[in-house]
Amino acid sequence: MKNIPIKNIIVVHLLIISFLICHSCDRFTDVGLPKSQITREVVFKDDQLAKSAMAGIYRSLEEQGFLSGSSSGAQVVLSAYVDELQSYAPAASDATIFYQLSHLPSSTKISSLWATTYTQIYNINAVIEGVENSENLSPEVRNRLKGEGLFLRALLHLYLVQTYGPVPYVATTNYETNQVIGKSSIIQVYAQCKIDLQTANALLPETLAIGSRVYPTKMAANAVLARIAYYEKNWDDAIQYAGTVINNTQYKMESDLGKVFLKDSSGSIWQLLPFSSIYNTYQGNVFILNTAPPTNVALRQDFIDEFETGDLRKTTWIGQKTDSQNKTYYYPFKYKQYSTSTNSLEYSVILRVEELYLIRAEAYLQKGQYDLAASDINKIRNRAGLASLVNSDQNTLMNAVIKERRSELFTEFVHRFYDLRQHNLLDPVMAVKKTGWKTHFKLLPLPESELLLNPNLNPQNEGY
Image 1 (cartoon, helix red, strand yellow):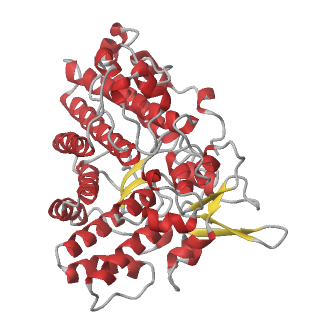
Image 2 (tube, helix red, strand yellow; image 1 turned 90 degrees about the vertical axis):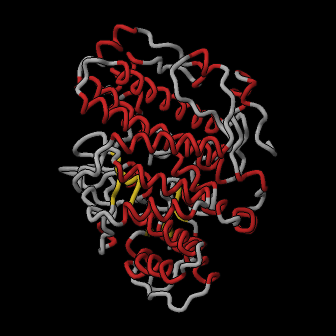
Image 3 (cartoon, one colour; image 1 turned 180 degrees about the horizontal axis):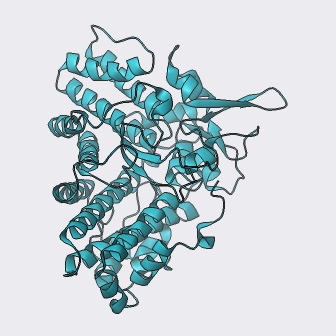
């Protein structure tokens, strides 16, 4: 599929972004003022040019960083870090370094994930400031782009804080401010994320039609607010925000597991549009094994063994390939398209309604509403062909929530890493599954190069 490097792809959207910001910098603290204030003024005098600037950001999100399904994206690397994927890639590859727990503050992936994300945030801030200061854009475009920018800024900071711990919340393109910015606490980052999402909620459309949910909406903002409430263990908010999406009749779980990751899935809340109308997803290209043994990653055998007997997700969402020695390897098969098709059939699903059922189930459980918790869990189980839980106590329901998150959300944008830590299972699980696991691996180290450039980012995360 899309095997050519991004640097070799010429996209008009990214060209516009390159005029807006100094995108050649290696670190977010190095990003200076736009090279041409005149260019910025021109872009934000025109609705189409302003929308093209935001389109360049979406392209970047699909290509690299936390929301990319590419082989270098966090989805692959951090799934190999925990107990989802096994790396068969060369020793120097990012996937293998994280699989073997040999990452260091000086590791390239540590710094590139940080720098990529903060560069994306800088670009987003450039668009937010551009539309706020423009007197020429239509109100519809101004509101939509500001809402999308605030949504994306919050989501990327949420991934940063979940991965690195306390981090800077960057909400400006001001070079002097960003050069010396310090870290905000996890609580402070959550609070700022919620402010951005609540502001975005007032600006974004309620929803979009099935098959075209490639821009954030109010329902997407509510989904991320529900996720933050889950991380904060704010169960009332989790029920409220998750329920807002679940109760919207436009979002329904697909009864057929084979349709969940199609572009027109009714359960998708927000998706990333492929590079071209004939492309599908990076995930299909990266995960599907056409030959064996693998040369990149495959699912761990212990993950396969943990599926409950009769779980249709095992047969529908997992593929297998046997090598010449009759050894079978398993791979994520949620996305079925390896390469191009006449028209795109699959978009990369970033948010989907099933996660919200599981968030709400845990919230109900924590509030002692066991019947409601079991009802939400059973919706997920029944769709997978499993029997309903009946007369369950708190421990049984909690174990079911954890298990269903494992089986439902595997290899989807770092859920497993965050979930294990959320439920205080990271050390017990990983100590058994990986020799050399250490408690401080609950967070990635801050990039050594960033600490040297900006001492205000100190101290380094414990253990590194």
